[in-house]
Image (cartoon, rainbow, N blue to C red):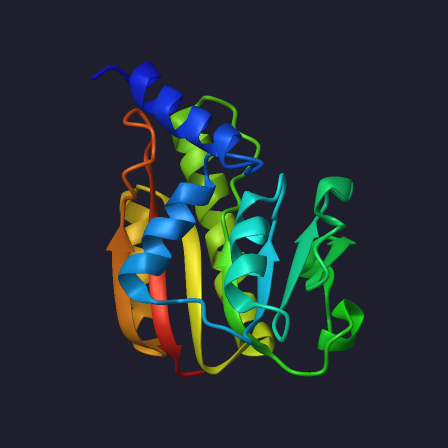
Amino acid sequence: MSNFKVKDHFFHKAKKENFLARSVYKLEEIDERFKIIKKGDQIIDLGYHPGSWIQYTAEKIGKDGIVIGSDIKEINNKLLNLSNVRLFQKDVFTIETMAELGVSDQFDVVLSDMAPNTTGIQSVDQIRSLNLVEMVFSLLPRFLKPGGHLVIKVFESNDAQVFLKTQRKHFEDFHNLRPKSVRSVSKEYFVIGKNFRP
C-alpha cells in the first residue's frame, strides 16, 4: 500500500467524522491500548493546534473534566463550542504556575503532539525535536500530578533513546508505540508514561 493510500484513508476518515486532523487516530489508538484518559480528568494538551486531540479528549472526559490547550498559534475558534475546553495562546514553556491556566490542581494527563518547525535536515530536526521533548519532561514536576500519565511525540534518534532511558524511572510503566496512522515515511513514535513518580 502506498503512503498516499494510508494518508488518504485516515485523512478522509477524519473529514467524515468531523475531526480537525487525521492525528486524532494516533491518540485514539494510544488511549485504547493504554487507557490514558478517563471521565472527569483534567488534561493539558501542549501545542494542541489544529485541535483534533482536544476534540477527542473533550468527548472522553465528559462534562466534569476539563482539557486545556496551549499553543503559540492563534486560538482555533472551531473548538470554542466545547464547554469543557479552555484554550490559551501561550508558550507553555513560559508558564510558571497552574493559575496562569485558570486551574489550581496539577493535571491528570499531559499530552504533547508537538513537533518543531522542520528544516528537512535530519540531524537538525532530530536535535530540535529532542529539545522539545526534554523541555516537556522538564515541565512535568510542575504540571503532572503524582500518578498522572504522559503521551508525547518523539522523533526516532539515538540521542532520544538515551534521554528517554533516563526518564523511565519517573514512571511506573513506560511504553513506546508507533500508531498505525503514522505515515510510513515518518520517523515519529509516541512515548506513553503511566503513573508518574516525581
